[in-house]
Image 1 (cartoon, rainbow, N blue to C red):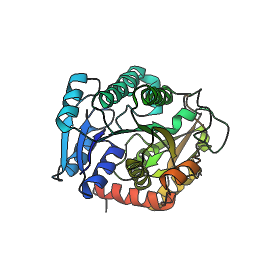
Image 2 (tube, helix red, strand yellow):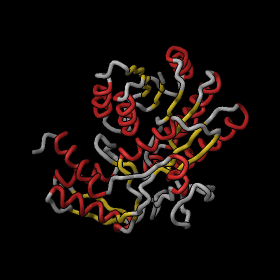
Image 3 (cartoon, one colour):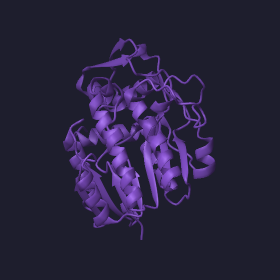
Length: 319
């Protein structure tokens, strides 16, 4: 039976992936530092649901702690590692660059080094659409140059891909990098626009919309992302990178209108200029993912937001 170690197991994507694997009887060892980038109570509630599975084990570990991480690898002896832990958020990286260097650079290196030492069969890791920076070629292809990210977050993700390639080349560590595009859904991150907008609209507070609403994102529902990750588990690649996105770029204002309609409340919008480190548009070319991973996103923004808002209303006890 497969034994999979998942870092960031109490995070948004980590929670959904862990739950999906656990429901299929796969043994999962979760690692997370439960930091306070956003309310740790949300992470603890996700974790509580995962702990209801007998095939789930968990250890609170900060990935910069090599000794504890080494012990986790030795004790669990996983066949596959899925590395989802990272300091997230493009805007937060501008104010707190050190957090990104510790988590996304040192943390990533410690994980891939443990994979080398422990002779792990495969490392699957989260990259990001942020590495495309100001790429003007649309849609974004994994064959495009990604030499000029415009955020520190994007730069750390690009660094992860380079380190992964070196480890694959030098040590034979098999790695698969997944560039996620604007993931959303139930149990999501409160700092993401769809989550914070929903919360503020319900509370009657103003929402800040950057670049005067003139932005587009490839919104990708969490279930599609989980399917994409799971499709990599049984693949045998030495080194590969894939886009995981809905392959449809949607206007930010479209997302806001859907939220308004689902809540039956008009948003109080404050338009603002573009923020540093942000990009106008993201759009995933998923031809390679479709061919090599059989990746086929199924959930539209309309349906995905409805599911998300229904969850949120239930989560806060709103009838």
